[in-house]
Image (tube, rainbow, N blue to C red; front, side):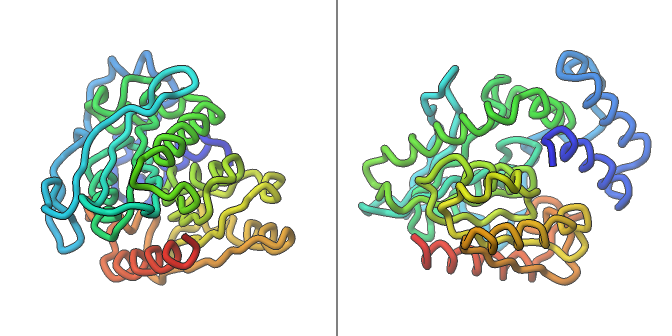
Length: 294
């Protein structure tokens, strides 16, 4: 599935499920179809990025005593890639994980996921794939952020992810042989793309991510756990294809489909999508998978 097709489809899906009104759907489509230049001029009708999350037992405070978190820059092929990083205060030869955001950019939810990994003993790096457009904080509206992502080429996005992997691998606390990737929605699809291009990735957990080009599956070196929600028809239509392709090329692949869960069910800052039981179990399975392969 092409990136722009995927991003546009998410707008239609949110309207079909009743998460946004038809007027908001049309506004977002106008922003998306007209491109980044027009996006900056469209009056916002949706929630601003970076709205505070509702606290729950999973979330990790930025100043929690056993971890450190910071913002940094990874040297990229054309420009720096903004990253958010978190890791335990003490430790060496630790496993590392790249955390790839949804289509709204590097928002507080994804930064919190990075801290959750740090609490579990990982060095986590969450790259901002809007870095080439000034970073997520440059956009006050989620539709504008999504539009901007659609203007960045797929290969450029993968290049920025590879730069983030290099940044992670150079951290003095990280064992460069123990690197994984976890991505959500758009980020799940980018996790699939990344593992077809970077053999340093040993384990991957794409959450409800669209498949990579199937012809690229032979290049995958990572062991993959695919996480899906049973109500996510658009993404689930590709499960059989990726399962067959991974089996054909003797790649490690398992999938879990959670009954009653929608696309983006792990996002605990989105009450329309969040499925608590599925989210908790998927997080446990994610940690088990990474421990197994890293």
